[in-house]
Length: 210
Image (tube, rainbow, N blue to C red):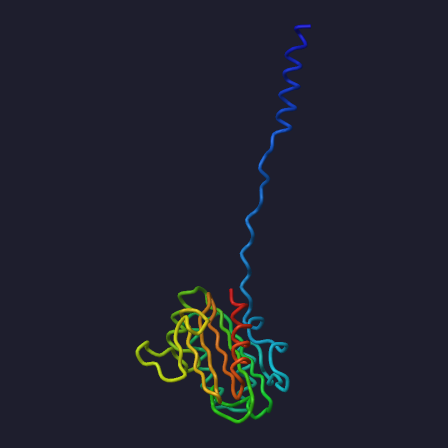
């Protein structure tokens, strides 16, 4: 009977090994992909009723080419400003204008008119440093003011709710927000829109910038 003891011990050892709890390998989650600017800009279902997307809204090359057919002077300035962002590292961008009247589609960005409109711009950069430098240098002619030179209606930094690299300008006729979030620089310009609509627009865009 003694010869069966080693065999029994082997069986016991095998059963014990099979009953051991082994850690289950869990692969690390993949990082969230960075959205294309066309997906990050303000979308049709996020705007007030009565506004329609202007022709050419979308990727920057399309927007600029269509704008050139309606207002060559504004298109030329916008093209120069976009090229400056590209030189600073912007790899892609998108621009959309929602307006109650087509007359606002080719207007200068931030110009005061009596037409209701919302403009949304987003650019994606190669890294956060490039995006932050571009934001500080200015986006389409709008640059953050020095901290000691704030004017009424102008808010700089975290008080905007859009992070440290942000500023907002609040006037009943024109409300503007420009900020940097991660790899992105974004801008919202709302003409003749109430404060709640403006804040909803900036919040919707900012939530998509990862």
